[in-house]
Length: 196
Image (cartoon, rainbow, N blue to C red; front, top):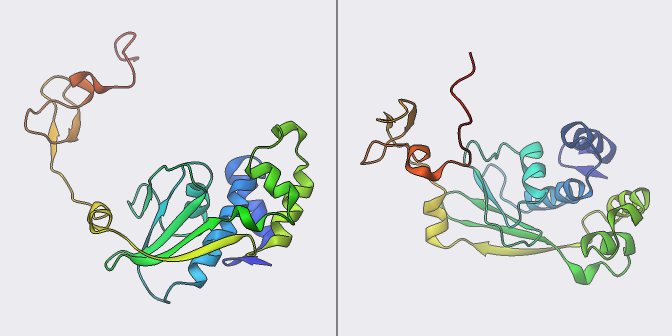
């Protein structure tokens, strides 16, 4: 059983190395990505939208050139375990999702996915075995076309860089020439001056 260019066990080792543990969501995500890539025209340039911020973005960044940093991966957090691979120009692609109706034979996957029991009570070995054995059988696939605003939203426009009038740090320019942090939008407050 392969996940993209990797045997299952090789991908599991990559997940462990990246995540620090054998994350079931990233393993599941690997199968979803493999299924998506097998249903896209070869040679297409694609972007990805994850419908959750949990685990799927990590799998996408491990297995594709799409990253949050290069803008080819976006998260539209609907809280649904699904992802969309689409042609970045036409918006046509595939949506892959973990299909709850296909989990009746995979009790440990179902229990994990629906959080039917606490993590410490889950049987991780059985869960990993079921994910591997289920392969592509527990996922739904839909053909989709993105709405124009989502295609346009994926096109990066480079804003000019400016120096903030208050803190004198570089930032993406805006009309008032004051960075968002100095406008009070910072997630932190300074405790003291710069540490030398």
